[in-house]
Image (spheres, rainbow, N blue to C red):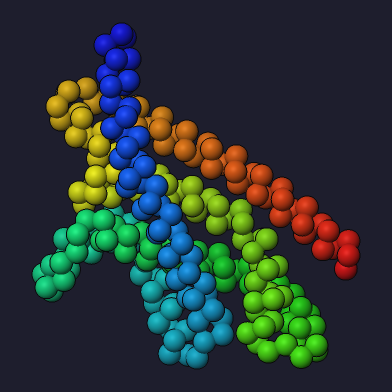
Amino acid sequence: MAHWLQLMAESLPSLLWAGLIFTIPLTLLSFVFGLALGLATAIARLFGPMPLSAIARFYVWVIRGTPLLVQLFVIFYGLPSLGILLDAFPAALIGFTLNIGAYSSEIIRAVISSVPKGQWEAAYSIGMSWRQAMSRTILPQAARVAVPPLSNTFISLVKDTSLAAAITVPELFQAAQRIVATTYEPLILYIEAALIYLVLSSVLSQLQARLERRFARYGGMLEANA
């Protein structure tokens, strides 16, 4: 037991450093870019012309219908066959962005569709254009509904970044694998990595709960003023 505790203490700085330098940036960048892609995809599916809407549906179908690990392998190991060479981190960023974009687009599409049509009519009645109605009336209401599912997607992404180890990104999980290769103590080190992910997920879950309560109060104030 003392040996395991000492090993955990010695390996903790390396694991935390890998998480700080690679896991957290990969998570944040993938989510931000994926959310922007998801919004564009959702709008294309709801309001775009038929060719653009068909492309958006095809993209969502492909990404949601294939495993994330396979997508990462296609980007990192497959694209070089076409002469497209990517470093591990950019390849992982592209893969996670495409994945988050597809899943978040379905969330965004659903919450935009849930906004009553009367809100559109009210916005048009006071002279708003489509763009103004979307940005000032529809999206603010949709955002309040989208917070819980998008927060869950973000928390899942934190854990999914461990798949980047399969394409040699030196993030938290691969850092644990490298230490295992020299210490031959897989059980305790993988448990330590799991505990770090657990702590991150727990902190994010608490932040999600606070954010949901804040949006709930805001929504209640809007309904009271209406």
